[in-house]
Image (cartoon, rainbow, N blue to C red; front, side, top):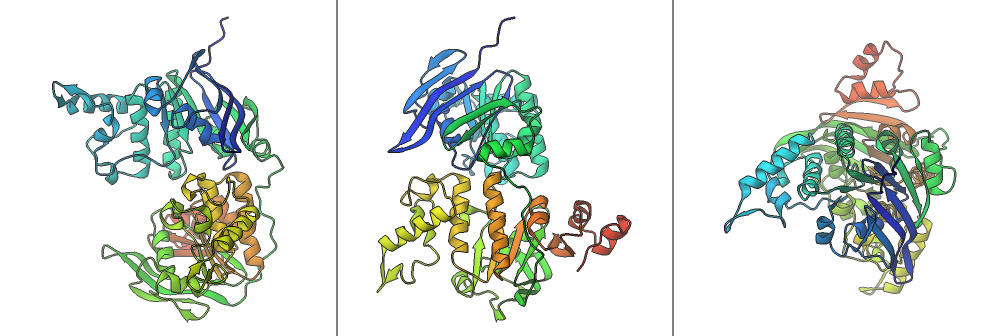
Length: 519
């Protein structure tokens, strides 16, 4: 029997930035028709490795082979010619262009001296139908959902004839339904003989869709093995290099006085209520989780509390001080720390240094400022301390924040916010894009804040996260709280019914009184 030639081999790949080795002798082999997961912590070197395969970076040393033959991938154009396509974590679409215009950009078909848009539309429609992508070629990219935008990125690679497809953290911003659909798409691509590489740190997704997994830790390839028969716990332990706990160790909460009080708050968007007469209290020494399906008013509620969205009616108090419709800085100075759900839009200035980003909330205070002059030595020294304390993987504090991996960007924001010793911490999707080791660490940090007497409001679409960290859970549906339950006594079924819009009494009746939620 003739052994199948690998579609891709990367041998002893080294990528060095100054003295720092982002990749240190990594080996990877992927067969045609295989879904091969690349698993590693944030900053382990996964994206750096794939950026070399896609032509965005060039190796310091090492060799790349396609179908057994050495190649040099010195540009994205060359990668496309070699039939390598990459679906990036942050999409590269032009919102004002149609789907077709985005897909054919750089590979435009012509008829005489004119663009042959009809030909492109026909080819894109055929590809969309063949791979069950269901994309409208005439839609504007800026008007379609995030999940559909990702399908457009996949179509861009297929339109250029890709036989090796790289997916970089593809599920970070997708709904559960969109994740299931993406997995079906990957399986279909592999069934056609294409080699699929999945960069991820989500163990359940690897278990669900991958055939093989290569683990990378701190720039080195640690092991490659079949996914079948390997547990999530084993994958996590190999990835992090120690035993990882999926359950946060915590004592029973001892709530104190109210810190945050939301009273009958309504928030409008385009004159339509998206938060409706909502009331909620968060006390010192407790974590209150807000659970709900994306788009039910969570984002607008957090924006209203933090001063980023106007409160139409109602009142918000922080430590008995009315903060309704105050400016964001006044609210943060009143004792609020905010970990925003979109780290790049609301959490960081990507072109500024990591040190400058860590100082964004306190740069105007001593010792970082004296007599109106920024003290950069102290700013940088303070950043180095937090980088070490929160294990932010970076060359140093002077790199641009945008050069960090998504997970390390998130850890930098969390370091900045928790360092301020605020009485209220609002954590919106705090572990989005983080690996299991970092998730374990962040969850423990939130519990530590609770145990230090702080009030924590946790907003997450991950029910496992809410159940693991929260003491009480407020479920939001269509801008209203449908029920508040004890995290230790509720179930996913009960939460699901509340998320669907049932009242707590209706949910408990439907479940036969088995779940004992408390207001």
